[in-house]
Length: 465
View (spheres, rainbow, N blue to C red):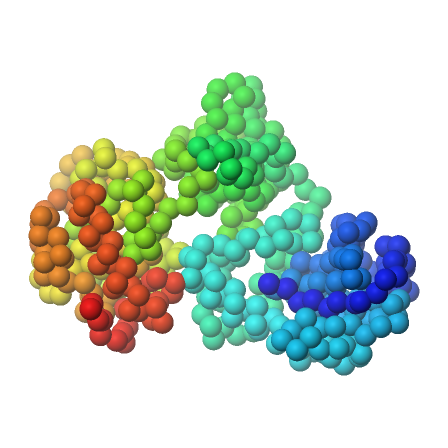
């Protein structure tokens, strides 16, 4: 999304004509693209996303992207005024009415700027809540990634967030842009295409290199779709960027945003090897594959497992479960998986409450790691394998009208839904039947969820017809 003003003109201007006029008006700008078809620039030490001037067949387009900060929006107004003076024409504001702009300063005033930032806040919050993942936006110098963790830290995850929180977040991100603009990052010119689909687009790579027991110096891990831990004397481990934060040590790394991390002090080779070892839990066969959550369509590449949860004997109480609902996008989850040898990262799960009380499906999602052995949750010293979870749905069984055990047993009678080992694999036929049940169920609550995540409070009764 962006805000545009168009100028219909056959005249052609040199970039310096525009830049000189801005400097005559006292604007101190940093130019990151100084030739057409696209100029890009922003106010020094203040810009977040910057301004674009695109040369088109009909004339010129002045563009500022959604989530622009106050500095970007103020400069946008001035650039529109500059183009008016150069073209001797009114600008055309791209909205529902294609409104002529004859007085940019009056039209793009402080009230308009605040309205644009508030609108960005609502849209960004809604997209984060719907996706449950960061949104990648182009900054003046490099991309920035706004997602659940950053939204939590600045308290903008809810629609009624204070506009001051948005200002604070944007000021912080602008500071990151300017602080790290000239620092060494891990971006690479290499691209990866590991998909069987020959038409699939290449994936961008961010790489940490090691050779001879030494790490190639860098200041921050820059955004790319895939992060590589490349030991030129040994092995290469590739994982999706969204998993990278799980393998780093807080002693050496600090978050810049939801994905990018700064290096706090030199990374020892031993820690690099530790990161490689951890990363192997998050490797996938096809880095291009997007995993589908339960209720959003069946994918035969993803198996489906049933996790059992009895609050009366589990280390997770009913109160613990309910407290996690508002934090679904930022909290860490894992669970024991009985048939772990058949499971891998990206497979699906449904969690069924069993035992006493209201029983049925209380959580769905995908496995966010391969299986790994850890301490037995029951304290009995058993050999237990766990997998990390990425939920797309959590419900309070005491308040939400969940899919009950009885409904599950009726729809899929070939599976025991009342108890047994946690982490049992469904057959393909059973998994398809469950997907039909879940998709019907989740559609009933489209207006009561964060994306497809039930909040569990004051929900309407479901209609399974």
